[in-house]
Length: 205
Length: 396
Image (cartoon, rainbow over all chains, first blue to last red; front, side):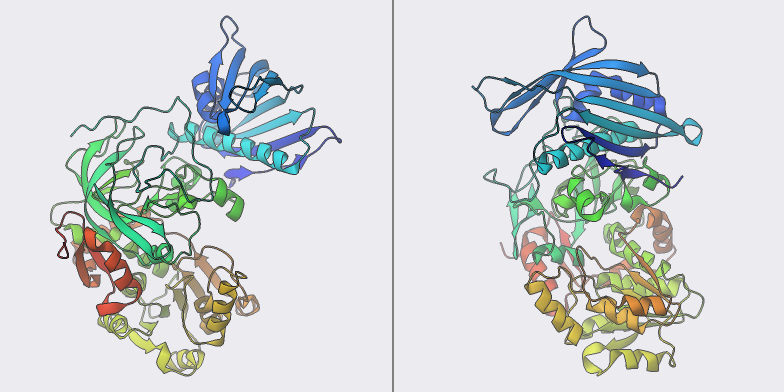
């Protein structure tokens, strides 16, 4: 097989106003396990770094909400349109709302991104090939947004791989440091962990 | 607890910081009993490694005793003495399953930057920048160790902390550098850089069957230590033409294998070294690659270049034409420490090697800033400093 890690297969724009993004990963876990993680709202929260809740009485609909820097928020509802165990999940995101700052009214975004996760069993079911696609009917105006969306796909698949292979996400949130003023000299943005992260265990000794 | 923190170029300080806690169920927390300063830590001190944050705790060579274990840790328990590999590995991904532990897919919590810069995400390392995950290091009184069932090796009675300490990095790194040379009995190996990794590369080359090792450096005490390990010293500052000298010492053929145990901060007075200094100052190049150039030109046709020295960015004017024409093999990368822990521990137990030969200075952690400067500036014969996190500072 020889392929592991992450491969950007294609980054294409289907016409001026459409955008289709793809990414793939090989995961050392059975497709059934990967599929179950994707369908679990608690694990979705960890994958997307967002709060995810299943809507009451609707098995195929979930509400998700992600806080943005500066007090903003983006939220929407994911509706699963097709699901085939351990092979394929398709969904559409509806009622997307963006609030740029706390106190400002939420603005409806008139786009409905569609997603597809497909799985193919490898190594007699001990591993699987995972392909993730996202189609947006209105492409963002700036390349930077498209880049960020592509990175978002990468991050989601990396986290899916880590959860499927190890059952946990590597983290440094909460570790000690000598920072005194909360001002971090780093080229990277601060790491935010979802609420579903396990609480730090108590010292036993 | 006390910990050595990085605040900027040439600015490291011992500070009081909160104790670490378990963050994942496979973590343990260690009470660090001994820790060391690695040559690659000097790249942090000198500001060569990006994505450091003020306050980061340094250190990736340490041994300690388990004081807490997460709920899913099965192989370790409170009181166990362990040595910990510097590269963090999950044990479950494609690379860990293939014993390429330092290429782990899952241990870096912030993989975005290296994925963008290198084409693939790097594994997490202790105390080595947010590119490598931002993990707090072990130059501290306590340290949190993730995936504790995978990396740490339990130490048997009879093996002291200082004997085991260098299994965390420099001993396996030197050993892998020699192993990467694919030596045949009697081969000649040239080792550039007689710091800690170079010293272990020299001894490992002999363990693996080398007939002659030529040790290249300009610091007398390092060459003296290399000679004590059986190497033939070559003080590069005292020869006019290093290539000619190596040809002379190998009867015209060149070394069968060349080990670059220097990495990105190569020094010297050659035209290549001056070229690198100018280009790095102008930000036209990030790493000084003069040793790699010398090794490519010196190595015999069909030979191997093994690179345990750290490179981080972009190198200029490498003689790839020479490497191609001579059919050289280039082997490099972070050490897969987990692969070597048990076999090298057995060599220590059998008395084949005592890694403590390397230690030139023992100091309290509180004196780590002074120790860093002493090590970097090669003062007082400093080759390797071991820090005791619990010793009282003499300067206090």
